[in-house]
Image (tube, rainbow, N blue to C red; front, side, top):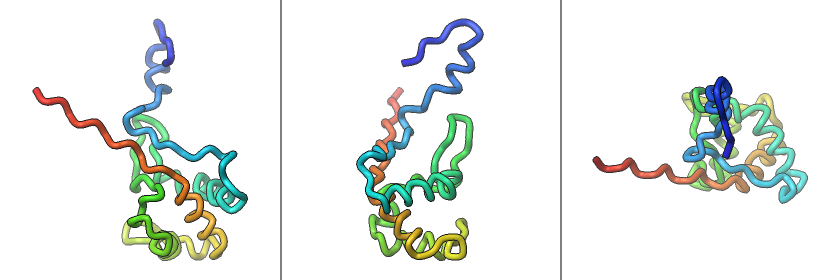
Length: 121
């Protein structure tokens, strides 16, 4: 836990992660070369919409994990390649090997923890 005092309080609040919604990513040491390529491509091109960079920032797309697209790698490949009505396709940016690497990486990403139920009053 971070310790804050005085004027640093606001900075401390801004830098403290929202633990209830923090997404966990796999340890890079556990990834093979294909998954590392997928991790790099994900963080370069996908994370801008599919992760929440800070507490006050909006997240535009759903959190991605091994459960995305029903956990089906073929559906993941199709969505990354062709896009959806709300997401552009990446078939012109990434070749099939790169799309496969992103899918391989996503297969290693655990789903986010469930949000705690609101307290009854």
